[in-house]
Picture 1: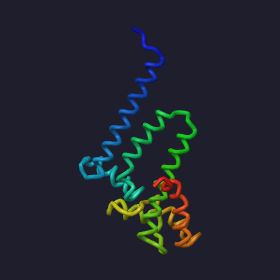
Picture 2: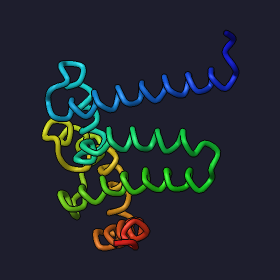
Picture 3: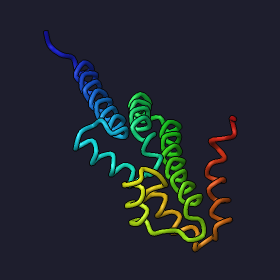
Picture 4: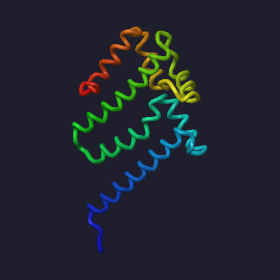
Length: 156
């Protein structure tokens, strides 16, 4: 029989979701050292970019993708998705504030350290810390960080 337009859309959506699941699982196992050479390179890149948040990245990628696809066109859902991304990036900054305090390293340096040591806040945290600490000081940077975090903890 003939495929309807909706069946083609559903099939395409299913293929995309399965691809996202596969990539997320590869990234997840790679973070624990069992993804082979390519997985190892991907894991090093993720840790370099996000530090410890790299452990959560594959889960956030998968859940965020499912959420985005199932709420396509919903403005509230888009705002929630963007806010989770912002929270994650500021979590990277928080990790760098704890580790490097008043002497923030540049983003390239934090990338290298986080990539090899699998810790810290990576490039993203290093970049924000490098911008915020000179501009607002260490205490001001923590305050800004907690202001960003507040909406996520108001329910706890």
